[in-house]
Image 1 (cartoon, helix red, strand yellow):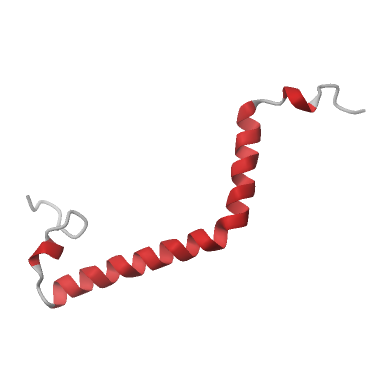
Image 2 (cartoon, helix red, strand yellow):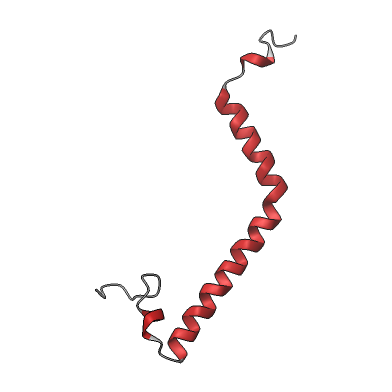
Length: 69
């Protein structure tokens, strides 16, 4: 037995979720690469700040130790 409700009456949330899943499945590799590059840039910036003791880098909120300021 087939479903009697026409496809036009599907909820908007279901179609948005399906659309997002389709977009995510298509762009998964690119998003992963972007996150990896961003992580490596932040890791390199923090390393440079620590090794050469560059205070403006170490004072960024991302690299501040808990309780400082």
